[in-house]
Amino acid sequence: MSEFVLEAQGIKKSFSQGAGELEILKGLSIKVKENDDICIVGSSGAGKSTFLHILGTLDVPSEGKVFYRGEDLFIKSDKDLARFRNNELGFVFQFHHLMNEFDVLENVMMPAFIAGQSKKDSKDRARQLLEQLGMTSRITHFPSQLSGGEKQRVAIARSLVMNPRVLFADEPTGNLDKTNSLMVQDLLFQVKEERNLTLIVVTHDTSFAKKFSNVYEMKDGLWDIDSVVQE
Ligand SMILES: Nc1ncnc2c1ncn2[C@@H]1O[C@H](COP(=O)(O)OP(=O)(O)OP(=O)(O)O)[C@@H](O)[C@H]1O
Ligand SMILES: [Mg+2]
Figure 1 (cartoon, helix red, strand yellow):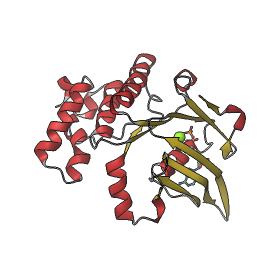
Figure 2 (figure 1 turned 90 degrees about the vertical axis):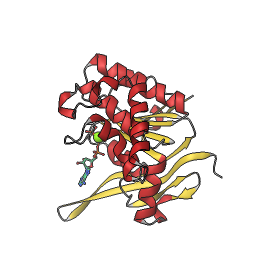
Figure 3 (figure 1 turned 120 degrees about the vertical axis):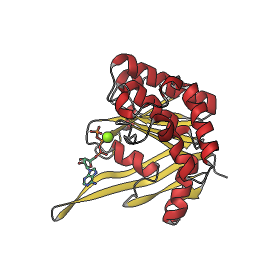
């Protein structure tokens, strides 16, 4: 088995623009070890979200490969890839993506329930996670009845319900005030430690980025080599 939990090789991504093609990612590679904490930074429009989505198999590259524990991911069928993603990867986004018509408990239990776990087991697990994240008193609230920081805590709980091995977060603090931003930052590192997760985060926030052992800066579709600091 590969010593890397995740490895991307020569990732390119182009989008069609008018008659031509716009190449956003120009051959990015990364090797991620189990339990690494990695931060990806770069200017707006650099392609950070695009790259994160490809690493998390939410999008496909135009060229290049992504391996998970040595296994080539994009040769899998869509169904197998979806199952893999649900079982192994968790996602937290800037705008939480909670479902407004469901309450907090239902939002958190949903991925487990959809994956075929019983309603009771899914609920128990969701309740337990919400308790760990200090949200027990809000489980019957709907997303519209939560603060920004609370929504993000719920989104973190939801991302963990399937017990992922790799947690991706795209600007998880981008929409929060300073206090809530710090709370979410701490929470991400806390769940990483407690669960031995691999954490891959995109952020604009330089003080958040400084907390990571590995920081990669994206520039013109490639890594800015000077910026890559590895401990
Ligand atoms: N589906 C798409 N079709 C066409 N162009 C796209 C698509 N998705 C992204 N792009 C373009 O790719 C570039 C990179 O987008 P991306 O969202 O990855 O940037 P980013 O680094 O995450 O930026 P930000 O910091 O603002 O979130 C942008 O110029 C964007 O317009
Ligand atoms: Mg982005």
